[in-house]
Image (cartoon, helix red, strand yellow):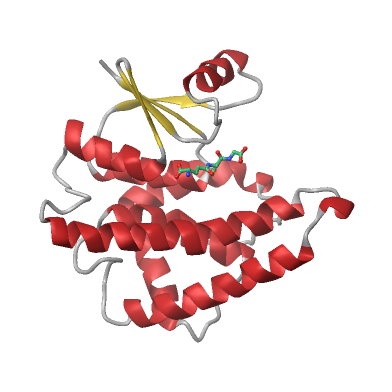
Length: 219
Ligand SMILES: N[C@@H](CCC(=O)N[C@@H](CS)C(=O)NCC(=O)O)C(=O)O
């Protein structure tokens, strides 16, 4: 039975799951979440009332949360690239970096973007300032870590890199990475050159005008 991914190509969390699927050449059907397709939107809402995407459907099983989708794929549809090491101690480092990118890069980045989409009186400048501060702190911490690593958890591309690609991509568009953080910038470049993530970025190009802060003319 074909795997179905309810997703949108411009979404960072969907790109995280897509990168994992592309790393392993895993076949799937994209159920494109588009407001002019009420059938897909209704299927999605019925599957996951929380309405956050991506969502993976494998037969009668519904899998939510990008990290869990990637772990699920490794367990039930493994390919040549193990995105989570079999060794539990090595896996802990991968999961720890995955949490870092999710909580301290993506979460503040989304906060800034979502705030910009609100009407002026509903905006929260203090929360936005804190989110920008968090991004600067996170970039600084990551710069030290990446000084000695090729990929997020070491020498091998992993689950953590699947999230790092889209999250650093949009974080830099949202709150520019200071050029002094050369290791973060070099890592972001390596991610953009990785064929799996490069494909996700290319597929999302037509949607760049949707970026609420205005997409920069790069990447
Ligand atoms: N914790 C979820 C987060 C997913 C998420 O925030 N997805 C965004 C798209 S990038 C979304 O569903 N946005 C819709 C909304 O906020 O209403 C995961 O890891 O998959």
